[in-house]
Length: 343
View 1: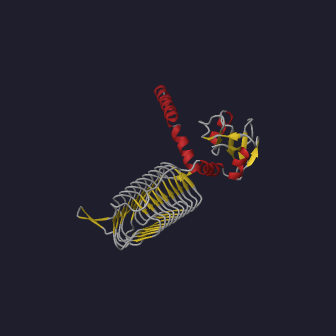
View 2: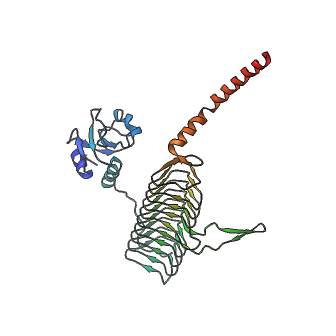
View 3: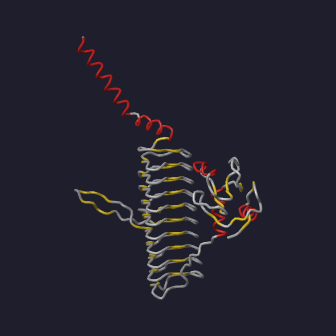
């Protein structure tokens, strides 16, 4: 690539502070950047690197002071602007499969839209409906009566069971299973009897699901993933879970059955959530937390069991002081014993 700072600012709707005609020849992270590169700073923890980076220009926010003699392009959202710039100047060169491979097993009753691509050895069962421009990679299974929307991208070794509903522009990464049976049993005389799982999974528009995710079908009605929600790798979502729109579910999260999660919720890595509770809109659950009770909207929690962040921090600070406190108690105990001997 070769663009002036002025041209880049026009692409991302940014405001320039510095040399407009400076020529940029590369894009890189702030640590790896070389002279001629453009980089970005969005996270405050990387601010010390602004004075150390070799990048010639930096995309940043309006509130970062210009303390170094570099060219800045200021935007309201540096991360989004940088992502847009990469997409425009370094588009992905990934070539998706074209057409329907001759090894595909395709039921006669399946309904395919225009410009569909289905990779080798995939199986499309009876009464499946697939929307225009959807791409399905090799070794994918799609069960009976499943509906898949337009412009979806389904990578290899994905299993989508029967009667599943998937919206438009959904991305599903390799190894994911959607619509597996919910984990339900009745125990009688020490024997576990399986409870039939008769419901479905419904996935909204613009959802992205990472690799090796499992989303269980509901017992009766539906497990629901709201539009715009993004799910990282290795996540387990149990039967009858409802996740609202635009939520973020990070890697290795486990959500137990019948839990309702609101809109714009963030569950950070390795969070565990018990069943039959609710997490309100805009709530944030910090990494490795165990959620055992419902969480109000717009609350940040942390710990096991999860507590409001400030409370959890105070408890953690006390725990860190336990060795010193123990030593202090032992010293007091020794002094008391000495006094008792003297008496």
